[in-house]
Length: 116
Image 1 (cartoon, rainbow, N blue to C red):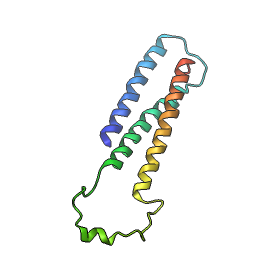
Image 2 (tube, one colour):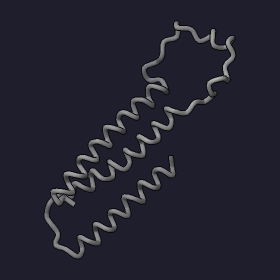
Image 3 (cartoon, helix red, strand yellow):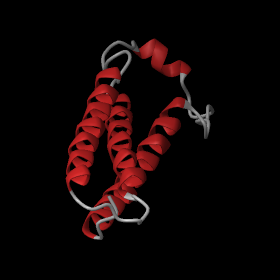
Image 4 (cartoon, one colour):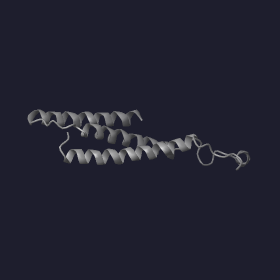
C-alpha cells in the first residue's frame, strides 16, 4: 500500500509542478483552483480502490487448508457481522470507487473550465 500511495503522491507533485510552471508563464485567473481539490481525490481514491480490491481478493488460508472436521464447526447459526472485516473491505471499495468517479468528473470539468 505504501508503494501505491507513494506513486499517487509523486503523480500529484509532478502534475502540480508542470501546472505551476505553466501558470508562472501565463496570466493568473482569480478563479478558485478546483482542479487541486479533485485531482488528489481522484488519485488517492484510485489507490484506495486498488488496495481494497487487493484485500478483497486475497485469502488467508487458501482453498484447501481446512479439513472437513473444521468445516462442520462453522454452521449457518453464525450470522456474519455487518461491520465484519469482509463487509468493511467491500464498503471501503465502494466508497473508493465513488471517490474515483467524483474525482474524475471534477478533474475533467475543472480542467475544461480552466479552474487550475
